[in-house]
Image (cartoon, rainbow, N blue to C red; front, side, top):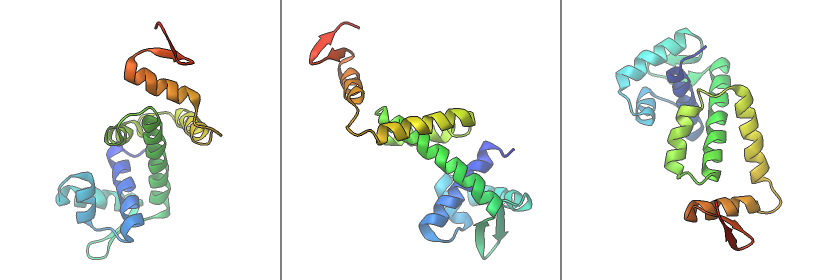
Length: 151
């Protein structure tokens, strides 16, 4: 089992690869807000474990095994961030919280969160309960067909 830190590296490598097509130590350092020597050390470990291929001057490439894990972590992150945004958590906060939560939740929980996010996003009409929730967030009170009811 990989550490949370190692999963973060794989996810960052995947994102950078998708954006730029190539990954350097400096790119990961900037993405994760850490020093290049720290990145160099972790990338060497990931290379030794078979998750990346690292050649000092050629860059970093995910192996199939590394890419598989990176895609799972990325999907978890996107699901959790989407759910938090549905709940009207500000995007920056939702992204930060998703970074923490993506490593800690049981796969079954992630599956159900994914189902909920997909259900809400594919509802034929904007979900009425979500409008009620937005009103509740603004006022602290439930509304019922325009009439406020007590909590």
